[in-house]
Length: 316
Image 1 (cartoon, rainbow, N blue to C red):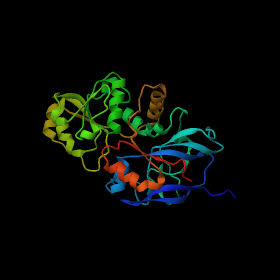
Image 2: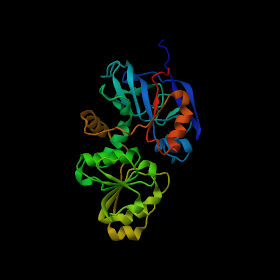
Image 3: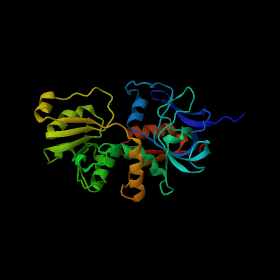
Image 4: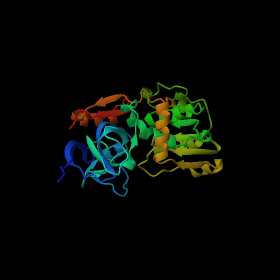
């Protein structure tokens, strides 16, 4: 009888109630690989909503859960039908391998069992910054790399907003970014970051909201040129409302950009590997699993924390 696999994982038992726990992993199938996680990121979007209990209900939602969808690790076991190799470094966008404990999205764990089709191989030149692959792919998915869709105004200078801006610059754009937090207004390369009240531009053709704040929408409609488009790239926990007559007069278009598609991951991996997309300066904080509670509080409460990384390399 094969030995059972266990993992040390972040367990969110209920909103605000988080701890490390040893969990039994599902038995790997022939299509699966076992990955020993090196680093995982803490999401200040969906993961924060799970943390504070404001995540809108959806199929599969519930506690207790293992969070996380930004993980990098090495393969320690390969199923017979997998094309991956032992010790290969891969990006893992979460896992559902914890029995009755939900994987939402299951990447914050020392080990995971995951289908081969879910992971993506990484070159050795990409280390901890590989956790940003999901956000980079989400940023790329906003416009699918099309120059005509690149935003000239981006709202929010967090990690997602910075990645959207960097991709726009990479494709020849020079966007303006709105940010209300003075601690987050620096380190712009090829674009301009301003407080909305100080923006000298009056109208924009393509606006992208990466803030996730529903109350900003009316002001964005007011900044839109006739026939312009507003792309919602954040995740919103409330109903979205806007002034219809104003949007009607401008024939405003609204578009929702969901999470990345598999091709987006492949495309941004190539951009990162080739050096065209720079990820420097986005990872600002590091913690080990032993201080996991403090790591989550810092990630969600410290405005200077852009991306918190949990280093699992010494965890069992």
